[in-house]
Amino acid sequence: MMKTVTNRHLLKPRRVQFDFAQTPYHWIPNDPFASHLINGIHMILPAGELWFCRIYNKALPLVTDDDLRLDVQGFIRQEAIHARAHSSAHPYLAEYGFETESFTQKINFLFEQLLGDAPLGQPALRKVIPAKQWLITRVGIIAAIEHFTGFLGQWAMDNTSWDKADPVMADLFKWHLAEEVEHRTVAFELYQHLCITEAGFYLSRQALMALAFPLFVKVLMDGYRHLAQQDNNAYQGKLAQQPIWRLLLEMERIGKKSGNVPTFSAFLQATSRWVSPSFHPIHEGNTEQALAYLAKSPAARAAETRH
Image (cartoon, rainbow, N blue to C red; front, side, top):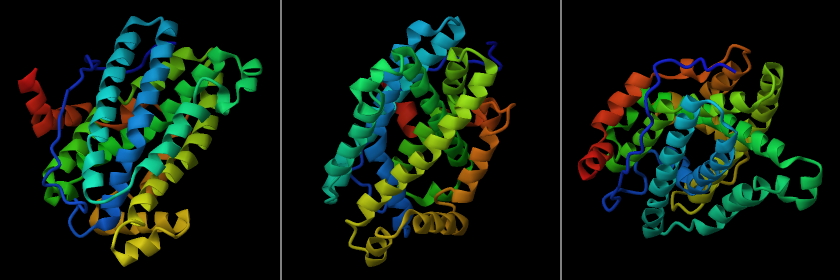
């Protein structure tokens, strides 16, 4: 299948480092909900990003397009650094007394067992689902997830509400999300490249999004819950016990009120765009805007100086 992306450029790793010694645990001022929701990502992404890398390394021998292979290799390098950067925030959470291990164990189980080489963690299914098909299915799951990270990336590039937040944590997320905008086409095009027919690609990506969207939402909200229930803020502790629909309403409220998080309705709108047969992530973000942020990111600039 022909690639449709334009204005390609080489994806490069930026070996960033962050020092959270002065970062408060409510790093977005007066907004514990947004702080915990976003901090939950530190517990999710290290295992998730490394899983992306493992799957893509397995998929590389199947790639017959030289440009796409370069894109996939660049994607792997960037995602590996994302995992390391978010892992570096674990001591910051621990310093404020947040226990994270029980939650990260669940995330590890998801990526290492349920989405491991044995389909759904069941070795017997290897006799039913060919290894290559299970690999391509997982590539498709990554494409669906990357649609959300690309959406979040462009949201972060447009967002100004974090200007008053802790500059180090804000830079970590904006650096990461700028790179998500930068490489937003790779996962989609890799899955398209590995699918046999265009019709099969369209139908399967809709099915995988139907799986990925509720899973993405649940994991995100569970991460919030895990941190919020350890907060001494009574309202946050009570909210953490509420069902997911109540948390999504809070996300919508906070997003509209402060802009510190995207609204859930914006997530739904992004998901609806995926349904179109003509959908392509090149239209979902602004590469030049992302590169402009990366050019001024304190962590990215420091990484350039070191290397």
